[in-house]
Image (cartoon, rainbow, N blue to C red):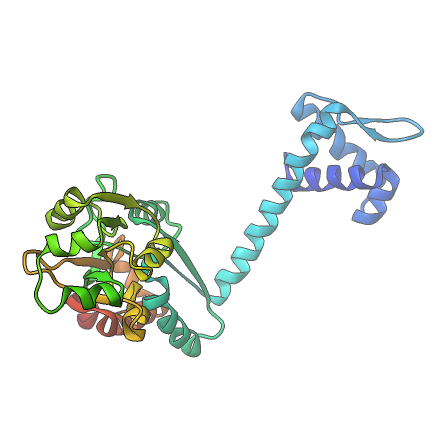
Length: 305
């Protein structure tokens, strides 16, 4: 089965005529007939009823959507190869860091490489390590350390630490005052939110959930709304609520008996050889630059490359 056969089959299905298909494809009618005979022999079915009128058989109708998918996939592959000639970089990123960490580096990178295609995929840690494993992305920003048993050897190019403070609505913070315990907070806000920032919840986060009257595990968007309305609290990665903290819609609070929480993330690749491509190295450098503004850089191998 080759693309000429599939393309010819699709053309006949559109025109319901071997003659018109031959004219459109700029080949002889004999070539069209030969291609269809070869395709039908390969598939072991008859695709068309031939006579004064050409019609698709039931087998032909069943095969048509698959044929069109093959043609579409081939076209996508050609487009991908054309894009690769221009240059391409690909990154997988945790959903929570797309906006605060990737937007500005992407803009700066495209100022320097205006003709290079950039692919940014989002997902959770497991999604991203799978993308790396399947070579769908060249770089990824994942939770660190990596505990995925299927990808034990990914290399951290940079490790960043970010605070994950407990946040509450300002009216709750006013009632708490300057010095309070976790019990005081949970008396005012008995609902605790879990947002899955970590691969394994830290002990302090687990203890917080156990002491809560109500525990909810929901995405960051609705969780943030609950906190702003004053009906829930929980640890939020600082960059995910930075605008709310700056605007006073949320307040970071620190109970005396609650250990501060952090999340470490890493910019990773399958190997250091990934950075041998200048455009990949430059894109990674732009991300590293932004990491210094978003959190605290604990390790940076890019500085030595």
